[in-house]
Image 1 (cartoon, helix red, strand yellow):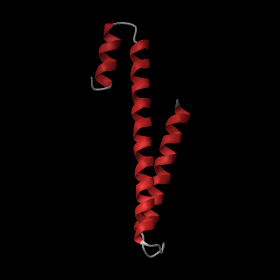
Image 2: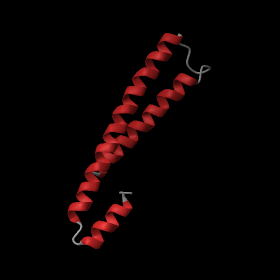
Image 3: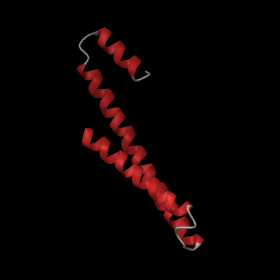
Image 4: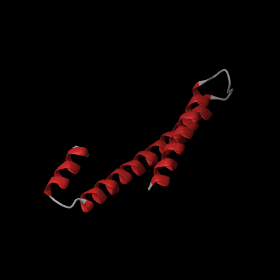
Length: 83
């Protein structure tokens, strides 16, 4: 699971770099249509990263609840996840 989280975070950093490239007009000379295309593609990647992060969170939540041995563990886990 740690590799999945690292991968998601690395992709998010790459998305941020793409947006920096688009926003910084002095470094990158391109038509507005090209900028909009990069922004649109990056937005799609960010949406996929967000969905992957939500799935990762849900998997960890369920795993934590499955591992909880008694009512106190379950209550603590729910408190930890804000449930």
